[in-house]
Image (cartoon, rainbow over all chains, first blue to last red; front, side, top):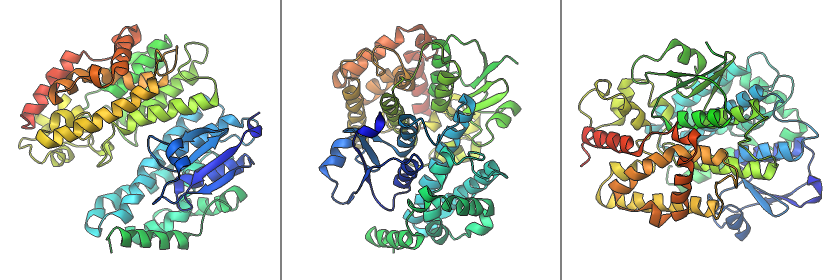
Amino acid sequence: MAETKELVLLNCWASPYGMRCRIALAEKRVEYEHKDENLMEKSPLLLQSNPVHKKIPVLVHGGKPVCESLVIVQYVDEAWPDRAPLLPADAYGRAQARFWADFVDKKIFECGTKLWMLKKEAQGAAKKEFTEGLKLLEGELGEKKYFGGDTFGFVDVALVPLMAWFRTFESFGSFIAETEAPKLVAWGKRCMERESVAMSLPDPGKVYEFVCFMRKMLGLG
Amino acid sequence: MKAVVLLDFWASPFGQRCRIALAEKGVEYEYREENILGAKSPLLLKSNPVYKKIPVLIHDGKPVCESLIIVQYIDEAWPDRAPLLPADPYARAQARFWADFVDMKVRSPYADASHEFDSCSSLRIATNNCAQPVCSQHPLTLFFMYQFFEYGSRLWKLKGEAQAAAKEEFILILKLLEGELGAKKYFGGDAFGFVDIALAPFVSWFYSYETCAGFSIEEAAPKVAAWGKRCMDRKSVANAVSHPDKIYEMVGVLKKKFGVE
């Protein structure tokens, strides 16, 4: 049985990708050891567990590492199949869930990074892409309680770390979430009522502070 | 319309992944060639409104987009034969990781490639040194633009020091794949699987990479080279992928068009 093996999550508190893994593990009520990595000085365990990308998050289960957050979330879903299914049972539903989680990766988090990593002049295209992405997600959510329908699922897990990062993206992208994506803001509040989400997301103010610090370090002013 | 339709473009390695998977499963389907240069068909626009890109698999009227998602869907919709992913969750995670690795090293590291197919004008912006409107050029130009910045295409796009650096980077990628393959027949083990499907269409490009950048994949990654040949022996792969000579021809055309000589 999966539980008898040791479980460690190598992570960094501000990483939205790490937050996904924490939420998935919490949904499955799985106990694990959380190890915060100093990304300026990566631990031997991290380098050994993710030699290809040397990035967090990494889930190490019984000494065997799993890398890439969406791969980790699917792994968690399949290793503990008896509770809180994160992906739907039918093949088409699963394909749709994977499609939208991949969309979130490309259009929200990858694109969102550009909002704070690039100089203001270069941000224009990224901001357009990001806000368009929000609108497409709003369309996909529609009137549903969650992206998974009535049940909190894969796409919800993939996107909800946005709630910790929205304030940062708003600030550097010069937009207001409530105006651009009111349904997502409401959905985010519903998600935050879930224990798994509330305990896995850091304070948005702290994330913003962290990003401001990173920008100084990178000479972005 | 048949029960299974694939909207595709003959030279697309992403479409080829889907064709290989369908062939492995012995699934009959209708192949529809999209004119990715000109006007996109109403069916494509309706089926993939988010990205408007091929490949798209339409099964009983319901569309599935993104090649690796399509391959996983094919595996799960026809579960009774030729499994493409392993049964065990850890092995599945490893297969997804390596297929994702292949994709990461293919997708543009500079910009989201989904925009590159959307309009001729954005294509012109993407090639600053191209004086003619891109629309008037060979349709495959469009397809190659998508890969313009990927690690492999840098091998024929660049010259001198920049090309040498690209070559070193590419060899590193090959060595990582070599390590993962090890002594196995396929990335999937004894059974041809998900990672093999993800990478096989790019084997057709090896000859072009080697010739343009002056190195031997056989030398740099002999196991991957041998694996490539084994894949080509499979009917599903041989019928789907482009001939290396055709790819080389097209690379030659592109190099001229973009003034790389």
